[in-house]
Structures are given as C-alpha cells and as structure tokens.
Image: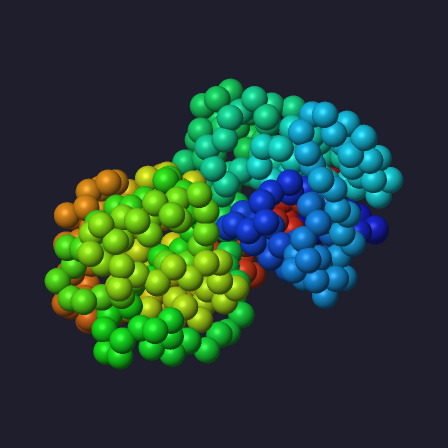
Amino acid sequence: MTDKRTVPIKVAHVLAGAHQGGAENFYTRLVCELAVEKGFVQYAFTRAHKLRGQSFAAANVEMHAFRFGSLVHFIDHYQYRKALKNIEPDIVMTYMNRATSLTPRGGYKLVARLGHYYDIKYYKHCDYWIGITKGICDYLINAGLPADRVVHIPNFVNETESKPVPKNSFATPVNVPVLFALGRLHIHKGFDILLRALAEVDTNAVLWLAGDGPEKDNLQQLANELGIAEQVRFLGWQGDVNALMQAADLFICPSRHEGLGSIIIEAWFNQCPMVATASQGPSELITDQKNGLVTPIDDVSALAEAINTLLENPQEAKELARLGYLEYQQKYSRDGIIEQYKDFFKRITE
C-alpha cells in the first residue's frame, strides 16, 4: 500500500486494565513494537505501572498515567480526555470495556480492540472494531455492527529468545514430567479441572501453575483434598513465559472461557506440545490431533487421558509441537501481525 501522508500517523493506545494479565502484556508489547516502525508515533494512556512505564520509556513511547476510576472520578476523566485531545491523535485504539466507555468520539478514528466477547453496549460509539479471532468478529457483526468496519487481526507473542529454566526448578524432582499452565487464577480458566485431571494422570507429573487471582486459595485447598499438593507449584506471575514453556513437557489450557488464548500461540512459538479444552479461542485455533489435542470443557477424564497419551508417546507430542510452530510462523508471527496493523492504520487515515 502506498502511503500518501507526509507526516507520521499518531496512534494513542488506551488501556484501563489490571496490574497483570494477558491483555495488559499484549498492550505493552504491541505499543512498543509499533514504536519502532517508521511513519507512526505511538502514545500510551494507561494506569500507572512501574514495569509498564519502564518498557515504554525504553521504547521512547510517551506515557500518560490516569486512574481510570469509576464514574465519580470525573476530574480524572476530564484530565484524561484533555490530555488525549492535546496530542491530536489520528487514531485512538482502546482495549476492553472501561477504556472504551470513557473515550468519546472526536477528531480521530476511534478503534476498539476486543480480545473477548464483551458487552456490545460499551463499543457502539466506535468507528472501527478489531477482533482478535474470527469468532469475535462474527459476534460483533451478528450484534449489528457494520461488517466493513470489523477487522480480524490476531495477537503475536514475545519472540525474545530465552534459555529454558532448569527442569528441577521450583523444587521439582529430577526426571519427572513437567506440565505447565498459565493465566489468572479465575474460575473461567478451569484450573480446578486441571487439578482433578492431574490426580488421574498415570505418571507422577509435576504441574507448574503460573498466575495469581481470586481462586488461588480454593485451588490450593483442592490440591490438598485431592492428595496432589506435592505435585503442584503455584508460581505467581512470571515474567519470562518463554523460559518456562521451553522447559515443560506439555502445556495445558483447561479454560471454560477463552477469547483467543494467546497462550496457545505462545505454546506454538515455543514448540511446547499442548492439550486444550474446546473453549472459544482454542477451538478456533487448534486443529485437534494435528497441532494440539482438544478435549471437551469440564471433562476431567478426557483431559487426563489426553495428558497421558502425550506423556506416553513423546514422538506424537513432538510432531504436534512441530506443526504448531509452523502454524505460528504462517499466521501469528510478530512481523506479519505488525504489518496488518500498519496497513489498517494507513487505510483508515487516508
């Protein structure tokens, strides 16, 4: 596409998210990666966050911090909108409900990026909508949004090379299979099902569970009740997911609800064989028995059987991982996704 503009396209990215999480990590990654592209200038509008701020500073991205609080914080909202107006962006891209609902239409193209099946009421005032899966795009169109303004652009992962952590990390016994799972410890993620499946796995596998959230205490109690507490390591949030993925024998995604499942793409990039439940995103991404195994949601026995199958057949697991990596290279690489964003930004500002 020929760029007719003689000045850079200014893009403000707005996220009022949590301290940690997949959406927050991708937001930071995308803004920083776009910042190195010629013809574009990126701005970050988000809550104050030390590590996120350090990432933006390293990428020479101008960051504006706000509370993005409830409706009573009208002064904060006013200051946010004033700061947004002052930079005169060409595009404002919002992430999730709160940032979108607090961002008015203006002298810019308002783009909402949706990583889940969010309530449409927060998004109707936008000009364009990006769905990170085809399923989300179909959901938006079926809700009445104009199809010609709904765009499918997937996520990409952190492609930084990492050295695998030692397999005996986190007091893991030597020569036992390592299962890895990652995400917010929330009921939607189905980690209770994974613990129940672990109790049915034939080998004395150890589970590394990275993340934190409201279900942590319940999950620890369940592990005790199932008699598998010595097989589970609650790691908290981890910065280098790639290093953990590369050390694990299998990655498990037991979610009940998962919009895209960037963790699926991360497993493919790191060539880690995987088993996932048939929630929205993973069932769209994975071709069962080709680049991963897919089991029914909440089916403990099926999940345990799939884990046993791959642990007992390492060559099958290796082939799933190889084909998953090819899928990543073809559809989800950093360069490919960045080009899609650049083309989209140019198209809507012509």
